Amino acid sequence: MYYILLGSRTYIKLWNDSRKNILVYVSSVYDNNLFFDRDAEILTVNTIIYYDRETKTLSCSNSKTIKLDGFDIIGLLDQLAPHLISLVLALICLKLTS
Image (cartoon, rainbow, N blue to C red; front, top):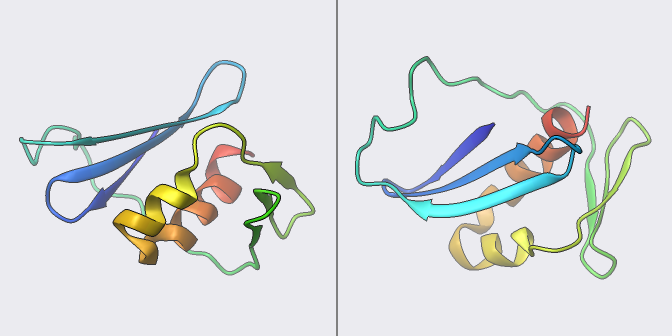
């Protein structure tokens, strides 16, 4: 389960269910220490990731292709925090589909 903070109060939670589907939850937090029981993990991305907005297909560098159906996380990030789109795509490629 991964949390991405958008400013000081809003967050996106990304995780896999038991069938390896990627689930997304967006909410606000009122207690800054609500989720953290250890230090944050730093994700280093040194790979090429390509997202096609028309087909909603994510291509990872390890020849993995992911179709992002259902919730439009990219559209949401376009509105909330466009600078986090590449981070979310990297997280999906490197952590949630391995």
